[in-house]
Length: 234
Image (cartoon, rainbow, N blue to C red; front, side):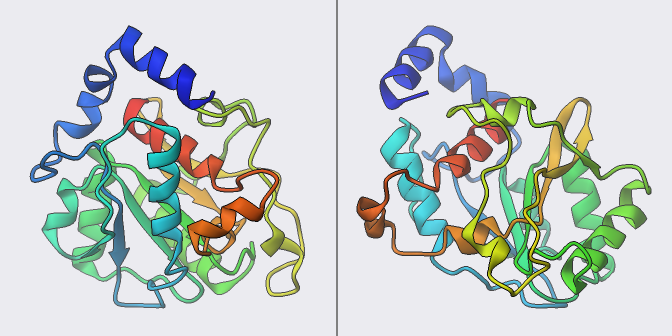
């Protein structure tokens, strides 16, 4: 879907009403339709891929009519304020070991309609971030909660059309497991993705100055737009 088609869809369906269910619980979002919130946590290294948020926000401005807050918000997972964020991002390379407050807030947020995009910066299925984060999800939601999503899932057509998760240049650079991960995983609550989980290191793939997109044949941040639009409309 291009910008022209999106504007037409917005007019026909009333985009403001379409996303109201995702925004209604977000106190303090103000005049913006979208705010990027990064979750910090005590264990591991949460402050990765520093330029990715600006790149994602630029794509939303370029391709959609959303009113976007240009400032990345960083909120501690242990802070109850995170419960008011409609979209959260959590990433890292190392250990993920939630403390009591982090565990309580993550579970409450997900079960109450929030959306968390989690990216393994090691892009390594058996790496420390992957093993420890997946264990946290098992502890919170049960051993069967985190599942592969099919490559025809609605998230792959929520804005642009994809036939599955786009490959990244990060996957075969020797840092992770040197595998192309042909799927994403998710925890679904009431039929919609509440936790989207990637071993593809999408964050590092999008970690560059957005002005450099002009040198690319195809903008590799387009799937970021799909993630956001899905989070707001599903």
